Length: 377
Image (tube, rainbow, N blue to C red; front, side, top):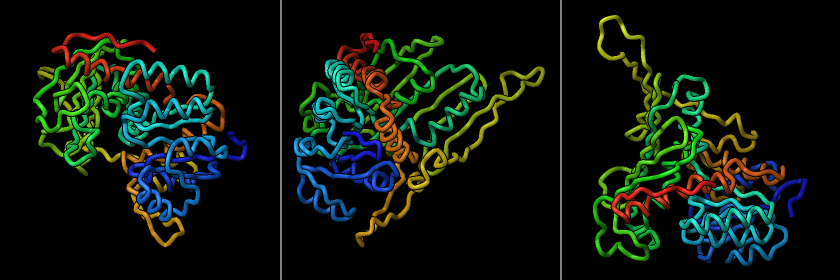
């Protein structure tokens, strides 16, 4: 179904998924875009706004259309594993929002389904293409950080008022935004984890899961340089503004995600210690993060930043440029991996290595911090 002339992509789930439509429309290698949503009102509204003719009210309907070789799943988390398996087993390329799945068994089944299908799979992890990560990676690659000593990730978000499938959701099952950049920067995998839950959810929020914790915090042992990483996840009952980010500490320099919106991240650099001084002096400064739109085709470079997009329907759409400008990078990598017949940068194995530690962390929290081994993929 993949054409040498380009790729036809159907976007499933139009609440967050709408943000990707302008990028697919403008991508030079995408020949056709379809949309799917189970809410008929949202489907009509979004399709009309973006001038999309191909409209589907179910994934089954999408998969019955032979014109579409690729599907981008932006559906609720409980559907990710089942829908990913459907897409792969239909012989199509699959992009999926995080997390890949919420059980180890589903991770293994997806890995096997992709192996059999031979198509491209990509977990659309935003932090791996955001300006913050690309800046920290450049510090690492240039040797500026020196040998890494510790990594920390955090994701705090108030989910009050969100759909009920989030109520009681184990925070660590959604850990990839905080954990993936740490494992990628360390070029390592997590081998074991100890995790504790903190606080207690009110009874009205304890729903379909085995979780009672609004906050979970974990320490992971990595398989490189005796490193450890710490991740804290919080979805309820924490009075703090939204933040998903990371900090990385090295022997020569460190990088910390911004604490307050728009204040900028911080870079710390060790200076030469004068004779007789206790401790090494540290230069500290806010840093202006460079944009990396130059890595993208000209047609979609503008989507790394907020702006107004005119789809030609008379209904301008405000593109947020969210998640550090990562969305066009994600789309471009997925499209090119499908057309080039190769594994994506965040394929099933890498996605499982970034997802499984969070699943194991929650299991540890439910056992009062008992150490859990993380499977090796």
